Picture (cartoon, each protein chain N blue to C red):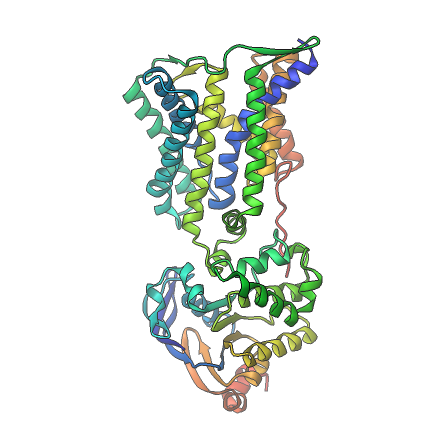
Length: 291
Length: 234
């Protein structure tokens, strides 16, 4: 394997991180909270897809639709039940609640489906495309394409639709948004819905690449994607993409050229260095107040 | 048009507004003057629904605003220019103005109102593609006013529009407030700049540590000895 193929698999892995990181960054941007249960929504999505494909024999498009629907609904319900009552509470209380929701989902999954690992069926096959000496798996191509589609669609949504513009307004100033007639609660709800729906898509891509399903499956990708969001500048949508892609590339390069065992440590070390130099992340907004 | 009765508002543990009553009639400019911390902004936030009153009522044309969802209040014809402008810094001037008309469905009229705002504030038209965060303080104030006007309000609440502006700009802003009022919009103005506010107000109230201590026409209060001593530096 050469440099170019490492780069492409890094982009593939990074695409998954980017899609997950969007959930963190959008929720942070609007609700100003870190939703640490986000990774576990991925896990739920993985189980839903697993059962849909394996036990019910549903087709891939139906499975995707089902997983997205379930995760979207789950995101809305989590926000309504766990976070909305804490809107006026301290951010520490919200953070602890998010960790609580995360444990609740993990243990719930363990109770319902046991802690034993289930093998995710192959969905995109093992095919690959070879150009000269470079061989790229179909899965990697699908993953990167999905990431691009999500990026374009989300950017259009945020900038061109009325709801998207209301989301941008809420991320800047909820009080002033309310004065404009924006229903801040429903905007927060929509944000959770989008983030969780994207988590479902990420879960399929993740399980297609690493075909094991278990209750804590979302933890590590969740933490990595959170890192990616911070890396890119939490609250910034382009930042989540950039952070995700870079994180994936760094991880694969670290595995390939330095050490497989140390790759995660290297990823986090890079994050620390970036935050030391630029505390708001790569594309993080600098808050300027004008008088 | 707007009737506030025995309003009490708590700010955390502090009783910030201790039972005030006042009203604004159709077509008037009414001003609420008072020192820093008297409760002016708290009153404004209670009216526009950003703060929940502890007791009392706020009604507009007979509808109780304290029972209305905060985001619905603007669609009833009450818009606010908040203290400190609070424009959306990361959005352009025109996007800010569009957000002012967020709840409206009447597209054709929105275009007319945009022209009206640009007529009132030609500077905003010149800078319509610029990010609001890059505007000067005075321009941001104009944008906040324009944004509120995009709601086509019956009554406009303005919280400290002159704060931090040069005397020249303050004059310009006050002229525009009178102009907006002449075009038929009722105005409730909160100001620390009591002299200017009383000069344009039909009626005025003096707010002191959460209570209304004086009221009268703008002229009466401007000539009142107590007001002169406390607020007009005389």
